[in-house]
Image 1 (cartoon, rainbow, N blue to C red):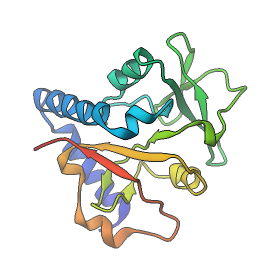
Image 2: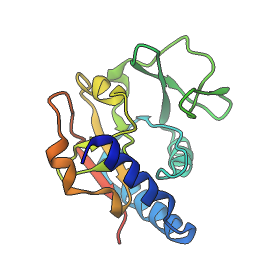
Image 3: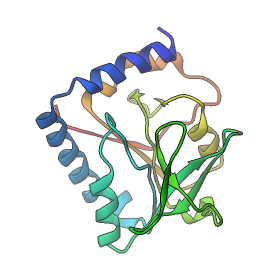
Length: 182
């Protein structure tokens, strides 16, 4: 199976998760995250504004703000680079060509060393933290010289052994995956 095939298969499966179960999964993942040392020690979180059918990040961002943490969201350039910009409740956003909400004003990217916890999106993962994302390799390039903690958030069906044979030399594993209980 190719990366694009497993990506499409898992995205289809994600869309089929009933709303009530998805809600339970999101709460379970949030509880795990908020109880973790990675979260408790972090002062500055890098995270995407999720879109369906991904794990919902809205409550996570709100919790970070309530705890006085800084939040940055990504912007992807046409040359496949990723930059993170400070995100606050009043930040103006634009819809990217990928359907992601990104900051409108992009004048002061956050240095990588300022973000001490990066929540990395993905479509499918293996047990070792390798992931298949949405394509393009943006996060793998960003992670190559990122030294902070990395985590991903996933539903049970997103863990697949098939990822093991699809790992490439440029792939960078995630430090920890918070997985919703089945």
